[in-house]
Length: 601
Image 1 (cartoon, rainbow, N blue to C red):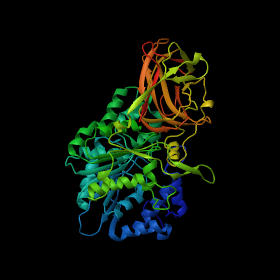
Image 2 (cartoon, rainbow, N blue to C red):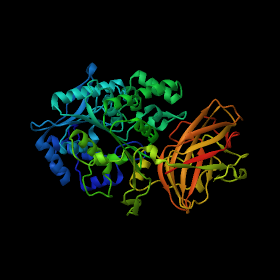
Image 3 (cartoon, one colour):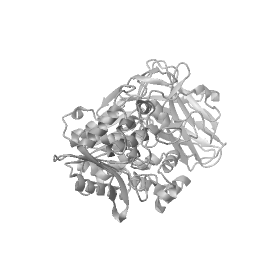
Image 4 (tube, rainbow, N blue to C red):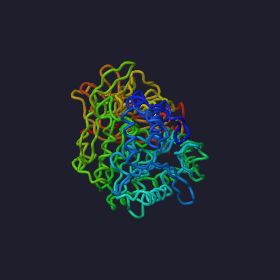
């Protein structure tokens, strides 16, 4: 038997589900989807269409598919947009005469369109919703049933119009009582943008998972281009760049890669940012659910929090350990029960509860939720497993807040010292002047934000955060400052600030990347947060004072651990601006002190 796409129907076993439940939805060192996720999706699709054997599924998935098939009609329509562009869709129409809400799910940015999360659509149908998932224009691999025509608009006005046309289709074919949107990643931004721009104001609720608030600052912030995220995304559309993007978009991408006309890149990204339309969302009173991760590699958490804080609608923000899609992805991929650790499905269950309350009028716990629920990094308990790695036995602690601003209640100044110019510097409670420290610019180091976008953070979510060894950091290519062992530890809550002076030996620009680490007594370390800053218009040999904020964090530094600040010039995530192999010098500003401002909760 074959699926709708012509592929043989895969056999899904408990081992397939265990792979998703313990390894997550991303696979490999480069951006890709776990084959187990695709196997579950294809088998479920065949089951609900009646084209594959039920025996290809474990009992719970078999029952889910059979239940949906018995009470609903499943179709794979093509929805025609303006200009005749055809979008692929997956529709579940509930039987009976009772009017029900529809959840519309724009697919994420991936070569398979709506296909990977069929389990999620069936789960929504089992809760009583009509479901209409669709692949935004241009996304998908040629030949797959889940691929849409057209050029990718990257969440622009064409995508907004497409979303409204999908609502038109839902009204015509499903006659829903209400319309809600649920999206993961790319689909989450489109969900918010369609809700804000639909002329008939038909969107009653949004759940935006691993979402962005400001696409411009996701791509370019503190003068630094986030080149690795763009490189991976451009290669993850299901086709070649010239086939997937029209000429104006390709020009924007080239400007970005070349570091040219960045004002045009910023405008382009701003036009595609939910933050730019938050006033409309507030005016329309659209209940909005956000989730994001502390070590997000595509849409850094700070810009999502900033947008969320501007919302005055009914709203909720979940902040999770990990990276893009890891917390929510497992729950929409095919893991019903038999969880490897408690709390694994909490992210998706809470998103569903949000929709249930606002679309089904369910009398659930949503009205009693805090506005923000912040998971504190690495406060889970773990145990070793056979074959290596660790497994979570107790989930990480979550902290309720009325707003993210309430997370920070005070701050603590740690002054950078030169330690006589030899060896590592110090972080002290007393200002230090008259020192300078230098390193060779232009090289990646072992102090890095992550080994790979998504893959490193996914391991964090499953209880295996990356271990660093600061003693092995390349001292000629970076600088390190640290505190003494801190009695009582510290409750780090918010965005740490850095102030220092920089000068360059050659050229007129410098990229600095600051990292904050928790260093244990045994010398191992975990990353707390980081952020780059690129200064331009420098004069060689002349100091300039720089001041910037790191990404926000919720982190408990344990008793007896040290806090370490590292500054280098290059991380694989970001563009390097400067002269390779030249000397960069850090010193205390002539007016003021070099300082790390640590936010405390």
